[in-house]
View 1: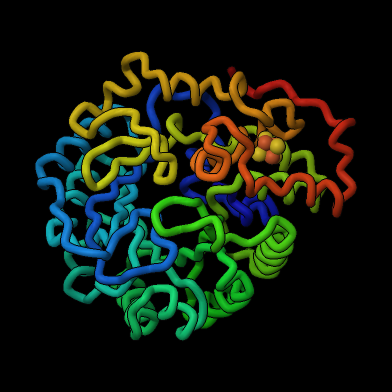
View 2 (view 1 turned 45 degrees about the vertical axis):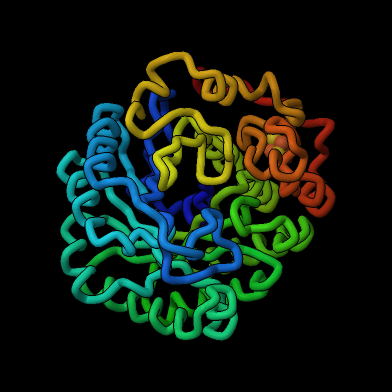
Length: 377
Ligand code: SF4
């Protein structure tokens, strides 16, 4: 993730220790638990192909055991996602287990099931709820495949906020909604929401490459996100799944402190600082890279023992097509799942890399730039 608000406004957050680490870790610090494939909506861009039928969830005991292993690994954040995680009646048990082990439990939800009753049972154990909003009501409902989804999501946001749960927005950029970035910032102001994360589209599940914006549009959209962030120094603004956003901020600011922070962030760390567990218990480097690295029952072993995919991801500079890029150390080659989906090669070029567009617009002389030394080995 790229913290736009930290880079352009200097706004510090609790999760900065994860985003700007000072040492290398053996285990991931963030795990995404896709605890179900069930969902009450049918979103056009669902990366997990959820909502199309009734799926058999893994038993609660399997997830509780995974939380225990995560605690032994020193995981700091567990992101409870799906499908729709609230479709599991026992979600609170997983959140409580994480909380009791000192792990921050966060929920990614479509917001429609955030009733007062569910919020009340969850609020002691959950440190953050991120609710997806795809644009104004009509656009959102079309995206989500169910009329009334926007109203319910907004109700859910208000309910969670009223109960004192930190609540923010999640917005996935696609061809169908990129023009609503301003709507998102306006909604935040109106509703008193102080956090948003913009996701670049990753081509997995129903999120087809054809839904994605082109790279010049991407540049303009992220510039707008930066402008709106500069106007409001109180909010936390992040982007996810495209570390090239950091290069854009450097190009816009030419601030060496920005570059230093980006180097500490190190760009994409799938399989290293983050990993994903699917509803079926298969462990992947992230939510979008369909290369299995192990099973939920032996989560910790994945990083304890030699693992071909993890080892290669750690040494990805030796394999990636763009490893000579002068910004490799702040990007790490972008999202592997997207490269794999388009080129068929896990080490291919991420098609959403918009470095060339940035270089043209901001007159970055890529050939004159040298790769910096790594901050820590
Ligand atoms: S060329 Fe590769 S390392 Fe450089 S910015 Fe693009 S994706 Fe990142």
